[in-house]
Image (cartoon, rainbow, N blue to C red; front, top):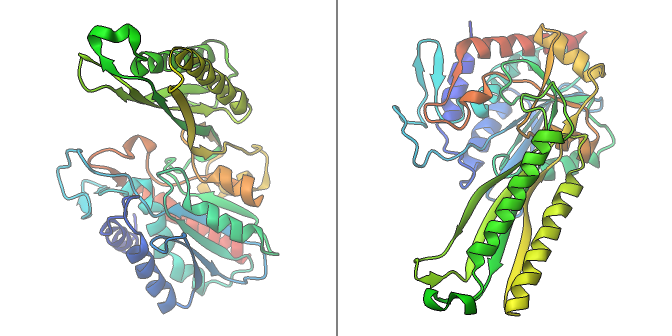
Amino acid sequence: MVSDRTIDWLRRLIGFDTTSRNSNLPLIAEVEAYLDAIGVAHERVADASGEKSNLFATIGPADRPGIVLSGHTDVVPVDGQDWTTDPFTLDRRDGRLYGRGACDMKGFIAVCLALAPEMKAADLKIPIHFAFSYDEEVGCLGVRDLLGVLAARPVKPLGCVVGEPTSMQVVIGHKAKRSFSVRLRGVGGHSARAPECVNAVEYGARLVTTASAIGARLAASGPRDALYDIPHSTAHVGCFHGGFALNIVPDEAVMEFEFRALPEDDADALVAEMEQAARDVEGEMRGRDARSSVEMALKSEIPGLSIDAEAAMVTLAKKLAGRNDHAKVAYGTEAGLFVAMAGIPAIVCGPGSIAEAHKPDEYVEEAQLALCETFMRRLIAHCSA
């Protein structure tokens, strides 16, 4: 059964509207006050504006390599979603805890904070760190500043558990993500004189078709990894818009697309293929009118995760989770950045199901939080041995 302390912390965390467009500082201040009260050292690593911050805390000997428990404090918007209750007020019903972020991923952070006094009271030989970040939902932005600080320190953590919802299964791999925005500028005019214009929507549609064709090729003949639920790399067009009226030739169009590539796949080659397609389209447009242009800009980049199933961090995580299986997932996390930027071995394991994330009436099961508490208590015992 999940503890009242965890439920209380989840209630407090959900009460902060930390949608990525907002500051997370009120939540950070609440956590800092609590850590101060129980005597846990902590520090902020803020963004350039000072409106958002990571929080890094250490319980146990700071001069020894430890285990990082990592979670993001931001959540996705609730705009346009049909919630049956207030998304920023915890609702407890039938063994489920509802609220924005309950699953993704304030449930994990709540367990960390609820068990912090037990960690503090233990005679830890291996330190336990909290790494709470901002702006994960908009490209894993905040944790990069924190990892830059950790990478420069003389004592590097032994490993990291990123507590994204995996139903407490150990995840050893996830896909890399590259997302782009493409802006096409043509020459508009009256639709009756369309041949004299450069229709940005029509040329943009060619790039949509190119991305779709790449996705079909990857599905048909690309590299495979059966541990993933979607076992191949993917291409996806999420937005395409332009034009104002049927009788006006559109002079601008915008397309947004992404690749989610297996860590073993060549994401750079996929990007280069789209870049060449964009150059080809631009050449045709400029051949009709030199004022035309196509600009392709990177929106976000998240490295993939691929850690050996026999690695020490994987073995430890399975012991803590009380299960021997492992998996790989299509969605991105901060785990790949821990490896790529700081050389810290990382796995993903946390309460709740990713199927419930980002939805209206998001929830985490109390039983999942109880399993996470067991995981944490086993970690305390391991770090105290």
